[in-house]
Image 1 (spheres, rainbow, N blue to C red):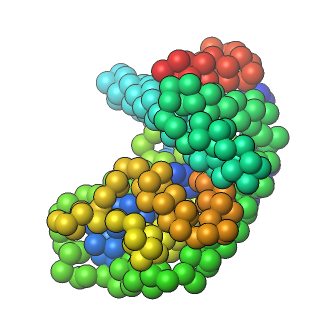
Image 2: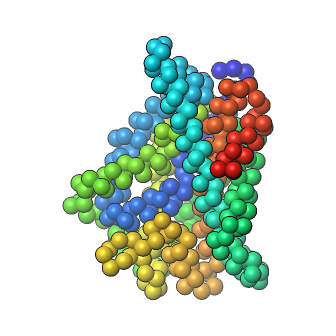
Image 3: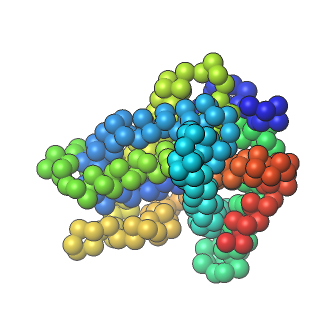
Length: 364
């Protein structure tokens, strides 16, 4: 590692940063939605098996490659072999991984902007700014661009500050807050009428559905996505990891935190769906399929919050704050990986690299 290369100052800093990358909207929105659409407890069971059998070993492999080479993913993968073909294949794999990561961030920033809007809207209602609240809840081009830009500026602020002062510092602040919000929200939702039905669906598996090939494929995809595998993030963070750290043990902490958040998100979202149903909100179609699966947090859950009376706006603010924190802990890693690659490949400084990559992503 060159003197200019960044590094995490502490083991807990790496664990929380890597877990923060893994813990994103895919955990708190995607996992419960997949569970609700694929048999609840059966999906949870298969997901846990996939994490242990496939995703965790791949996480160890990616972190190991990063730490062995101490280079960005393009160089790390290229230098795994001396043979020209495999060096070219490694080069191509690193480039593709970083391009895909940037494409993910380009849409992730838009969705995260929606989350910010939905977090601010009930606050505006409480302040009596009804027109502003309505604007925040309207899917207009103007609102989408403004909230997306705001989210990207938050991400830029963290990544510009570097690994220690930016990524590590904010991961240590945001991840504990995320857990507190998640546990508190889940505990509150479980006290509401109808929540127990959702809890039963989530925790009691239908073993006849466990062998369904479609369920297995979806659980495997969710496991890979939730741990940020295949897009160079964990390789990048692995290059920042101290030589003294035990990679399998450290990776187990990352996988454990990520899986715990996904599990807790299920304890929150699935009971909340059935609370909404108990309050007259339709969540399933006549054929048993989940309604609005792709926009669950923008349709079903806000409708449920509206039925909670005076507590509704505060629950809505807490929930969407939770989602925004999950989004920002992932977006900083999505920006960091291509920024570090650009920094090492072109020898530009971090600030310039952050703005170049961020502007390209924002234009996309």
